[in-house]
Image 1: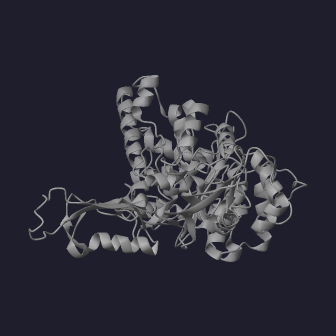
Image 2 (image 1 turned 180 degrees about the vertical axis):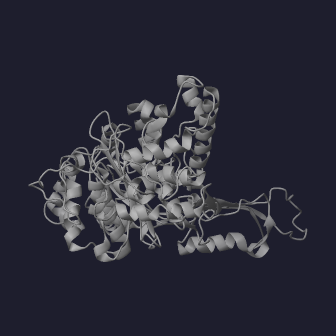
Length: 631
């Protein structure tokens, strides 16, 4: 159609999408020369027009610009011969000593020395080029980021990250695959890039187009991405985690939209692709805390006591227990390191996170009934069938499989199967005592941060979930990709998830394992579960997962802090701050101390002391020591 290339040309002139890279015409060589007295025949020209789209922009959920492709201006300073810094600063409107300060900073980061200039500064230099013949400004298009947060989310496109990827291959070798994370820039690269348009108009007399002399390639503009990410919440979460190792995932349970996605330690998203920042990239690659590792998607760890929620829901579905089932806190089975009343119901067991109770819950679901007169071989078969049935229900939570987040890499986690124990111990040579650690979220079981957040979204939704995703709208469609609009259901009935909520709310109140993170004073009811993951190589890891408000959830938060001790004294308060920040927009004054404590406090040492409910632990001195809750 005639309108297509000219519409593209109009877009180009407006500067909204396309750039005309090349155009040319040549006469039709097939026309033969005619005698001078012959009638003049029409001459057609073969033209070629190329339109290159500008890469799409990235916005957050509030339409704040996060990334765009624009003009950049770079001044390379001469290697020899000094500059009159006073005149230079005056020319660019910089304060006294600004050039020397910027050069001193650059010497620590890059060689050769290159200064990034604004458009106005580059203009000033061009106008005074005769006075500064040794200086030249290079103008080029490049990706720019307006924020220094959410680096694992934004990522990079591989075609501009060549220096970083080459450097990573040289320095980290075996860890390169885990370090490589292109983020949304890579996952949505085709949509962001668009497609170059190549048109072949045949131009006749009067400069009129008379069709095409070759096959055209249609122009497609680069699509903008509108993220579900709340940039303010993201920055707040990154500030709370500071330089600790861990992750935070917050999402909207009804839609699967990710509100906050933190992998700590954090870094500036521009570092990996910006020219002249090779030294910073090297430091990131060799850092012992691996800041480039996308922890929520790639780091699969035992979930700890948070997994008791899954086991409880499955046991209810299989008929192994009811909400009123009680078990004695029998520490001959497994340790429960704090005193609490007997758990006479599931709600009380969740409140106290009683280890012997959940040991017996899973044993009831897996082991053959004691009163059945079955042969040993029959008991073995029943145990294998029961564990297989348990595994089938657990996997319906999106565990032991990829959730399908819109990022290039993700790990499926791991849920052990019957054949693992058959191979390790022999077909009928293992019993429930071999696998009891699964009842506490320990042992062979591993979940990612995304999976932990998704489990809580399932409970909040009473049995279904939408795949977690970061892009809520592509281009002008107003919709995410189709696969992020489908509901997926578990094999557990909704009434069994409803039975978990009272215990999760009780855990957040006085006497519960997460009483410190209670938000009742600001009218927010929280339902959650703490966890403390045993670590044989150092201090235990702290976990928490919950949602708020408990009755009509709007936000799910999963927190994992490495080597931070009890989940109720570190991970739970951090999650509560994020919930309050998102739901209220501000933090109550009495919880302001939590922020400093989480950023700067010794969480493990503080975990050895019992803090006052609804108040942050003091730094220093610590509160008088008592026996702590283990979660």
